[in-house]
Length: 474
Length: 105
Image (cartoon, rainbow over all chains, first blue to last red):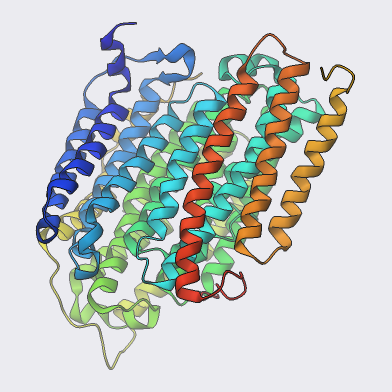
């Protein structure tokens, strides 16, 4: 092994170097010039995102614990894009007076969780997977409790760390039985020894339950709404997009790579989870008045759709899941971006406050409308194609009833997504939100998510690119 | 040597600990006790890994290493959780779950 082999893990290396250098730069800066750390961090991360697209050799490191394939690199690049948009969107919030002291912490914690997700996606055995999962979730709890003077933020932090530790405990209990019955924790060994023996089925159930907590599937979703509401809005968007996306990717990779011989076992489990998640997520979203809780339940319902593609267990399913998550990143970030901008400016979060927004802030309204249309899956924008490919994949595997239930749920979701549009365009309001202008950086973030919603819908090369790389593990 | 104790005893012990932990996590209303319940769950997992490794695969070390890593990660998790609990105590003057509940749907 020579020094160049480490270039295989350059995603992680670049990000570790960025996080450490931010830590040192933060020490050197005077308190009044701390805000200069924002451009430095954003540029460092943008460099990392660009380096991610450079061609790289696929390879295996540390005796198989770390593997990098074109598929995994593509997943990391998808996540990078989302994080870059979040960093841009949080500019307006970070420069506020209350966050002056701890700007660097925001970036360091966020980069650390991302390093965890990278290692998790590249894992070649369950030990690396567990380490990555925990590296991703422990700093996330600190991020949720970021505004320590706000009681809701601290409450979100404790709720997240307790439920995340509990779910990793359940997941580990399943892993211990997998180790006991197969004699190995390496993915490449487990796949030959897995069968539908009772203890192994139990282990798979425990494993999927643990992962279901992270993706917030019903009935493991109880922490989601509270954590999403309590955490600062820009961090909520990180929770709902990046954390959920990485966990879905990982669930898919492990099910396809390691548990592929017992597809009939986990297909049934996911079937039940998917139906429950779509129905409950949608029904609860109907009655939410707070925008953050509303988006939390809508993101639970979207996770049910993601399962639809995972369940298929083929290349078509994998492509549709990755494409759906890419689209979901852009559309959800568009919605959360508008919510966070308005919350920062006015402190208003209720859906009633959005009444008449079109007459005062037409551009924000248009972005919100685009994002919501994309989440609902209305044809011209990308969300429609995301859902369309998922349904096609599920139908190709013969899951017609599931597709029928999913289409019904997509229709229900259309109702509450249109409620937001109706509030903004039609409802009258005596005291509408004042017209305001955001700073350039936040606007760039919002514009990027709007562009993504459009481009992904019209530019089919993206789908083909994903499809060509999704062959990696078959 | 543990040669006289069959593997099943360890598995029964770990399963009991695991479900005690789950029961405690779901019924206890104190944040610190909930954290302790999670530690019970993780220790049940540790017993499983060590027992499987010792009895079934005595010539490898994967289970032992997994246990070591779990202990280290659990410590990190507890550190962050307790830091947040201290913060909660400062703002709520309580660490009872029923009091730390501002958000209702």
